[in-house]
Length: 226
Image (cartoon, rainbow, N blue to C red; front, side):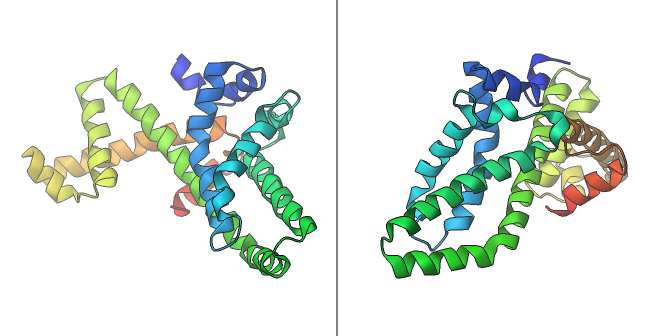
């Protein structure tokens, strides 16, 4: 496994928890988008929406401070996504409770909290979808890195997936672009999807999202979220 591959797994959590600056940068860059998306969705149309950036700083302080949450994170304890969801939600609740205790704009705060509570189920699904997008992105990046060091066929299949999903081009249009027979492009596409699925399985396993039983179902459920 390469150093780049290691950076996509739980190993980065341990190094970040120990204070490794490079690991902390990888951690923040990789997972910040899904945490931001959750907070923005939670606080949309509430008094706290403008505090998303401050809340994110508080989340990362909670995770990365000495004896912080990351020091307690272990792959054996469950999925990384669920762990990050719990930490972020707890920070959000703490910020909301502080505002309620101060009784600032009491009526507005009360109605905003009711709005958030009514969204809880939807917010959980939204986080799961953002987490699925993160894992798919990591799998795609890993596939492209492997293709860059592989054969012409591997690079072609990686480009085929980029055109199909990144740009939304249908197979017949890609075949015309490449001046190739659609049948051959379809065959390459099926092989590319199978390769991508294997990369996705590895990434999911590293993040605790692939149980030993029903692995195919777990992958299908993640893809269904998208």
